[in-house]
Length: 423
Image (cartoon, rainbow, N blue to C red; front, side):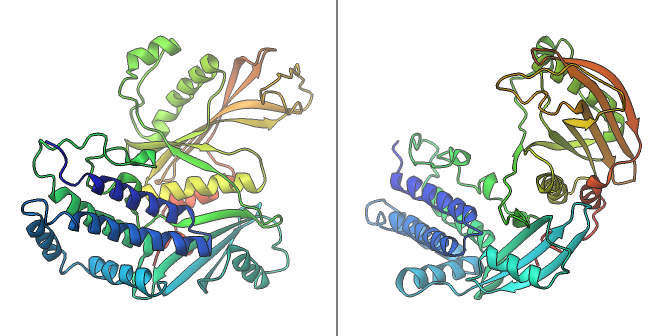
């Protein structure tokens, strides 16, 4: 049986795409206003598309009335209805923006300030306002600008969070016309985002599931005022990649069971396999609650200085969002050359190997738990002329360096008084 409201799938995809466009434009004052207005318009367009079918589809008007009645007490639906009428027929929403500015020095000291920002205030103006009220010595380091947009008619809810409620409500309307499981809706819709491929998925997509602990923020180098790009990607388990298949590829493979401190030595052994077989071990962090593994993510960033500070701040943010109480971090890194030590220097075209002849390379595994246990393991290695590693000895430490301070603060649930609070 054909779908009774085929155009509604494309309209629902539009709602999803416009929400993401507003998220992408969050720190561009004027673009955010435009994209959020477009999001509200897309919600209304979805409703109108279905309403035009009520004289064609038997029982359609009854379904629409039932949907409206079910949302009569929903404050977000009432707000969304008024807001759509406002932006379509009259004027823009009356918006308010709160910003948090958090400065981190190269020593990982922090200074934080909250600013009630005019909606027209750009990030550049926010940064200038912050620096005007800070000591003269603060002119280099990392600044994180966190922002929260609200409508004055719904002051207790961030706008994108309100948008998730509106999406859920309109998806409920579309779903009400699909009570018959025989309806064929395959191939309908036009999802612009890979996170919204399921044409029959009428629940809130995971990508829109808003977490109150998660701030929207950007990082910038104070000296250059340029934004820093750090990609954080969740690592999904591949159901087809079984331990047997991994064992065939790496020659040995094993599951990690236990809390981070107990697992860390086995993780170093596993990362060593990755390094010797694949010639690299990308930086990634595994998160735990007790002995329960709750997820992992990779971090794509390169460079030192403020980029390195931003990388650790990103790890701290992910720990706060997931409320993890333990982690294991794995990465290749450069270490200081020991006095009197030499090694062969190989330059490999098209690779990053041996670009720092005054440094040594090591494979690092860092683990920590909320109860105060710490472990850092470094395994030195060298590369031959083809870039393949030869593993060396292991050095173990029970204390972490200062750069881990923000990550440990997040692990211990210490308040930062900054962008990690939405209220």
